[in-house]
Image (cartoon, rainbow, N blue to C red; front, side):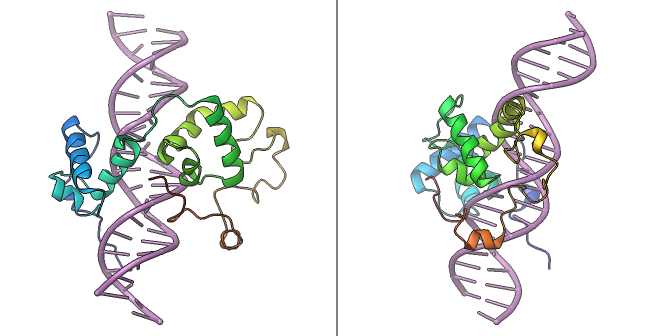
Length: 163
DNA sequence: AACATAGACAACCGCCAGTCA
DNA sequence: GTGACTGGCGGTTGTCTATGT
Protein backbone atom coordinates (compact mmCIF):
# COMPACT_ATOMS: atom_id res chain seq x y z
CA UNK A 1 0.00 0.00 0.00
CA UNK A 2 2.82 2.40 0.76
CA UNK A 3 2.49 4.58 3.74
CA UNK A 4 3.03 8.25 3.33
CA UNK A 5 6.08 9.43 5.23
CA UNK A 6 5.45 11.24 8.47
CA UNK A 7 7.01 14.35 7.06
CA UNK A 8 8.77 15.91 4.10
CA UNK A 9 12.14 14.30 4.59
CA UNK A 10 13.76 16.35 1.88
CA UNK A 11 13.24 19.56 3.81
CA UNK A 12 13.93 18.46 7.36
CA UNK A 13 17.04 18.65 9.48
CA UNK A 14 18.41 15.50 11.06
CA UNK A 15 20.88 14.76 13.78
CA UNK A 16 21.57 16.64 16.96
CA UNK A 17 19.34 19.54 17.88
CA UNK A 18 20.82 23.00 18.12
CA UNK A 19 20.21 25.33 21.04
CA UNK A 20 18.18 27.57 18.77
CA UNK A 21 15.92 24.71 17.70
CA UNK A 22 15.40 23.74 21.31
CA UNK A 23 14.46 27.28 22.22
CA UNK A 24 12.00 27.52 19.35
CA UNK A 25 10.35 24.26 20.29
CA UNK A 26 10.08 25.11 23.97
CA UNK A 27 8.77 28.59 23.24
CA UNK A 28 6.15 27.24 20.88
CA UNK A 29 4.92 24.54 23.23
CA UNK A 30 4.82 26.90 26.17
CA UNK A 31 2.73 29.28 24.12
CA UNK A 32 0.43 26.83 22.34
CA UNK A 33 0.67 23.49 24.10
CA UNK A 34 1.66 20.20 22.52
CA UNK A 35 -1.20 20.01 20.03
CA UNK A 36 -0.67 18.33 16.67
CA UNK A 37 2.88 17.12 16.23
CA UNK A 38 2.57 16.96 12.46
CA UNK A 39 1.84 20.64 12.07
CA UNK A 40 3.90 21.83 15.02
CA UNK A 41 7.29 22.03 13.27
CA UNK A 42 5.96 24.27 10.56
CA UNK A 43 4.04 26.41 13.00
CA UNK A 44 7.09 26.72 15.23
CA UNK A 45 9.38 27.51 12.32
CA UNK A 46 11.39 24.32 12.66
CA UNK A 47 12.79 22.26 9.82
CA UNK A 48 12.14 19.05 11.71
CA UNK A 49 9.83 16.10 11.46
CA UNK A 50 6.96 16.10 13.93
CA UNK A 51 8.12 12.86 15.40
CA UNK A 52 11.52 14.33 16.00
CA UNK A 53 9.98 17.33 17.78
CA UNK A 54 7.87 15.07 19.96
CA UNK A 55 10.84 12.93 20.90
CA UNK A 56 13.00 15.93 21.68
CA UNK A 57 10.31 17.47 23.86
CA UNK A 58 9.45 14.29 25.73
CA UNK A 59 12.96 13.03 26.25
CA UNK A 60 14.89 16.19 26.79
CA UNK A 61 13.02 19.46 26.99
CA UNK A 62 10.02 18.75 29.19
CA UNK A 63 10.27 20.89 32.32
CA UNK A 64 9.28 18.07 34.69
CA UNK A 65 12.15 15.82 33.70
CA UNK A 66 14.42 14.64 36.47
CA UNK A 67 17.86 14.50 34.93
CA UNK A 68 20.95 13.01 36.46
CA UNK A 69 21.88 9.69 37.97
CA UNK A 70 19.33 7.07 38.86
CA UNK A 71 18.98 6.43 42.59
CA UNK A 72 19.32 3.00 44.15
CA UNK A 73 15.57 3.04 44.74
CA UNK A 74 14.96 3.78 41.07
CA UNK A 75 17.36 1.00 40.09
CA UNK A 76 15.49 -1.51 42.16
CA UNK A 77 12.13 -0.30 40.93
CA UNK A 78 13.26 -0.63 37.32
CA UNK A 79 14.47 -4.17 37.91
CA UNK A 80 11.23 -5.06 39.63
CA UNK A 81 9.05 -3.51 36.96
CA UNK A 82 11.10 -5.04 34.17
CA UNK A 83 10.69 -8.47 35.70
CA UNK A 84 6.93 -7.88 35.69
CA UNK A 85 6.46 -6.03 32.42
CA UNK A 86 9.43 -6.89 30.25
CA UNK A 87 10.56 -4.30 27.74
CA UNK A 88 7.52 -2.10 28.23
CA UNK A 89 9.63 0.97 28.76
CA UNK A 90 6.79 3.43 28.58
CA UNK A 91 4.94 1.57 31.33
CA UNK A 92 8.04 1.41 33.48
CA UNK A 93 8.62 5.10 32.86
CA UNK A 94 5.08 5.75 34.05
CA UNK A 95 6.09 4.43 37.44
CA UNK A 96 9.17 6.60 37.63
CA UNK A 97 8.13 10.24 37.73
CA UNK A 98 10.46 12.49 35.79
CA UNK A 99 12.03 9.66 33.83
CA UNK A 100 11.39 8.90 30.18
CA UNK A 101 11.04 5.58 28.41
CA UNK A 102 14.06 6.36 26.27
CA UNK A 103 16.16 7.24 29.29
CA UNK A 104 15.17 4.06 31.11
CA UNK A 105 15.74 1.95 28.01
CA UNK A 106 19.21 3.39 27.55
CA UNK A 107 19.96 3.01 31.23
CA UNK A 108 18.82 -0.58 31.17
CA UNK A 109 20.85 -1.47 28.11
CA UNK A 110 24.03 0.06 29.49
CA UNK A 111 24.02 -0.11 33.28
CA UNK A 112 21.36 -2.54 34.41
CA UNK A 113 22.15 -5.40 32.07
CA UNK A 114 25.70 -5.52 33.36
CA UNK A 115 24.55 -5.07 36.92
CA UNK A 116 22.24 -8.06 36.69
CA UNK A 117 24.79 -10.16 34.85
CA UNK A 118 27.32 -9.42 37.58
CA UNK A 119 24.75 -10.68 40.08
CA UNK A 120 24.43 -13.85 38.01
CA UNK A 121 20.97 -12.96 36.78
CA UNK A 122 19.93 -13.03 33.15
CA UNK A 123 18.62 -9.53 32.35
CA UNK A 124 15.96 -10.70 29.94
CA UNK A 125 14.44 -13.46 32.05
CA UNK A 126 15.46 -12.38 35.57
CA UNK A 127 16.53 -15.92 36.23
CA UNK A 128 19.93 -17.09 37.42
CA UNK A 129 22.15 -17.33 34.36
CA UNK A 130 23.01 -20.99 35.06
CA UNK A 131 19.31 -21.81 34.98
CA UNK A 132 18.76 -20.67 31.45
CA UNK A 133 18.82 -23.60 29.14
CA UNK A 134 15.33 -24.64 30.07
CA UNK A 135 12.50 -23.04 28.14
CA UNK A 136 14.32 -19.81 27.50
CA UNK A 137 12.25 -19.42 24.37
CA UNK A 138 8.94 -19.41 26.06
CA UNK A 139 9.84 -16.94 28.75
CA UNK A 140 11.05 -14.12 26.63
CA UNK A 141 9.66 -10.82 27.84
CA UNK A 142 8.57 -8.10 25.52
CA UNK A 143 6.41 -10.43 23.53
CA UNK A 144 3.14 -9.93 25.31
CA UNK A 145 0.45 -11.97 23.71
CA UNK A 146 -3.02 -10.68 22.93
CA UNK A 147 -4.40 -13.11 25.49
CA UNK A 148 -2.14 -11.63 28.15
CA UNK A 149 -3.27 -8.14 27.26
CA UNK A 150 -6.90 -9.11 27.36
CA UNK A 151 -6.35 -10.88 30.64
CA UNK A 152 -5.43 -7.64 32.26
CA UNK A 153 -1.78 -6.95 31.66
CA UNK A 154 -1.88 -3.21 31.26
CA UNK A 155 -1.35 -1.97 27.76
CA UNK A 156 0.66 1.09 27.07
CA UNK A 157 -1.67 2.98 24.78
CA UNK A 158 -3.35 5.97 26.35
CA UNK A 159 -2.83 4.68 29.85
CA UNK A 160 -0.78 5.84 32.77
CA UNK A 161 0.99 8.25 30.54
CA UNK A 162 3.16 10.73 32.40
CA UNK A 163 2.15 14.18 31.34
C1' DA B 1 50.80 12.38 22.76
C1' DA B 2 48.34 9.47 19.71
C1' DC B 3 45.44 5.89 18.87
C1' DA B 4 42.04 2.21 20.04
C1' DT B 5 38.25 0.64 22.54
C1' DA B 6 34.28 0.87 25.53
C1' DG B 7 30.58 3.30 27.53
C1' DA B 8 26.78 6.54 27.52
C1' DC B 9 23.07 8.66 25.54
C1' DA B 10 20.57 11.29 21.89
C1' DA B 11 18.17 10.51 17.87
C1' DC B 12 16.23 7.84 13.99
C1' DC B 13 13.51 4.09 11.90
C1' DG B 14 9.85 1.04 11.17
C1' DC B 15 5.88 -0.90 12.93
C1' DC B 16 1.47 -1.02 15.35
C1' DA B 17 -2.89 0.57 17.18
C1' DG B 18 -6.40 4.10 17.71
C1' DT B 19 -9.19 7.51 15.51
C1' DC B 20 -11.86 9.58 12.14
C1' DA B 21 -13.88 10.60 7.66
C1' DG C 1 -16.83 -1.47 7.19
C1' DT C 2 -12.68 0.38 5.27
C1' DG C 3 -8.63 2.83 4.55
C1' DA C 4 -5.70 6.83 5.51
C1' DC C 5 -3.62 9.47 8.97
C1' DT C 6 -1.40 10.23 13.28
C1' DG C 7 0.68 9.38 17.72
C1' DG C 8 3.28 6.39 20.29
C1' DC C 9 6.38 2.57 21.15
C1' DG C 10 10.51 -0.47 21.10
C1' DG C 11 14.64 -1.59 18.71
C1' DT C 12 18.65 0.05 16.72
C1' DT C 13 22.15 3.16 15.18
C1' DG C 14 25.24 7.17 15.36
C1' DT C 15 28.10 10.16 17.77
C1' DC C 16 30.51 12.03 21.50
C1' DT C 17 33.30 11.31 25.69
C1' DA C 18 36.12 8.77 28.87
C1' DT C 19 39.47 5.43 29.69
C1' DG C 20 43.14 2.27 28.62
C1' DT C 21 47.35 1.01 26.01
